[in-house]
Length: 134
Image 1 (cartoon, helix red, strand yellow):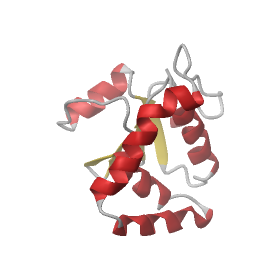
Image 2: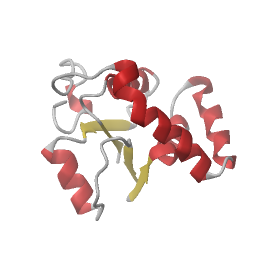
Image 3: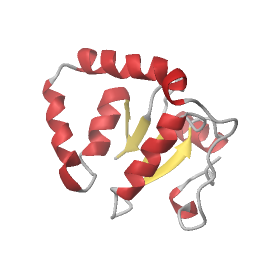
Image 4: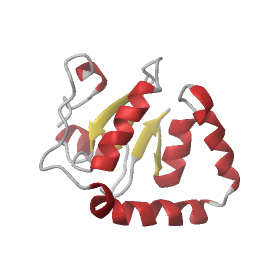
């Protein structure tokens, strides 16, 4: 089964990251849903995850939940090209990785802006989105 990336659907940085992942995921390993969607909330509830934080990317893969830097590194290991090399950052202790992740997450709206609504995928990409994109 494909892994599912849950992301902040109104965040421009997050939407750009989803587009980047799609371009570097030729096997279509990843599917997507906006954290704000009912589908994402149901997936999280089914997985026993509570306390959804819209400032964190969440990866559901192989029956496990990954968030923040752990999710980002697991995503990178499945991308084409040299992006797999980022997984070597796993040697950095998670609290330090998450400190950097949280700093970027706190500032993402002021640095990159936000949308009024979740992104709507193109018809070609609609099957990669659990919730139709928004």
